[in-house]
Image: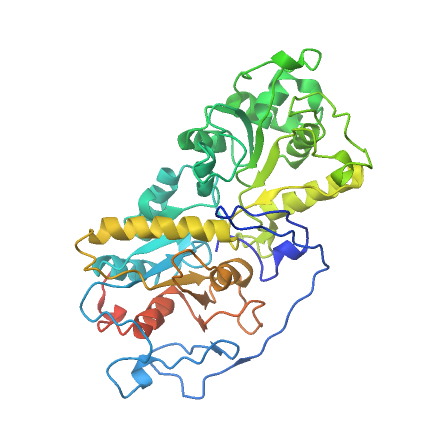
Length: 457
């Protein structure tokens, strides 16, 4: 996965809600101090094959017997597709699974090429983002030497597409024609992403600062960057004339903010405002008779984060703060100012809304890849989630229960966040050395006859 160290990032701050399918209720996650849960893993009793790296089977998961150890032709209780239409598919995290510091990891290209050659569907599912899906897919295609398209690629903010026209019926109103604040990423890349989704009036912190420099006096170091990326505001900032002043209907953190101070100040101003009109202050703020002491109770814009990742593994030898770090900082500032709880919605792995969206993308990609008739009437029966982060990839796959009841099987690799020799906080079905070994293990589970070893990159 792009991000994180192997700790549950969401225990460090409270998340109010996650986007969920209509009809499901999201309960608040209580604030609790960090606590690592320990689980025991055991080494397999059979000796490791000299041809393959040793695998670790987690004792808390159902026992797994690799096909090569069975005397029968078909593994027990598996949906076998022998030289036929594959009834299984894959979802791969990117950073720490396929890439590390933008460089391909061993076996990544070989694994994806094999799946493509055999028409086995897969998607890439990442908590990364900050750029157009088409641009990122092209970049990945060049780095991995494997054709990747938007059709099988999901970034952390990709599910925000559904919010433009309220396609899922989860939101109070359509946002297509409303002014929305988009933060994070380099320059105005996230603005361009939001506009590609269909948002017509996208405002960035740079736009607001350039139109009203007094709003935050400490951003001179970023001034040239802001001048290069800013645009005129759709309405002026004039709190004396609220009907004509800039009104923001939603706040989106698409990617890791670069200027935490400016973004925090503008978001705080909007959360304290009346009905999202910048420069105003709600009269309900601090009213003890109201829910949450009146804060965020007066038509303020809803706040959305595209992923919860507190830390991520970059080129530096120590983890770096990610979007979850900004979320924790903002929540802390809000609490210090108001003594109230910051209400926000978070998507991305491990939240069910992201897995639901990814499953639909996988369904559509499978239909396109195999064709309606090419599926042979065989439904998708299992998805293998290959990731490096127990707190997002593994937890999300283990917890997800989709409307089609397709099981997601979690596979943890050792090439990213997870450190070999430690106990994963959330237990995968199996732990393997790398993505190539993950694909091999899954193929054995499904009784797939040919081997990845025969594929040439």
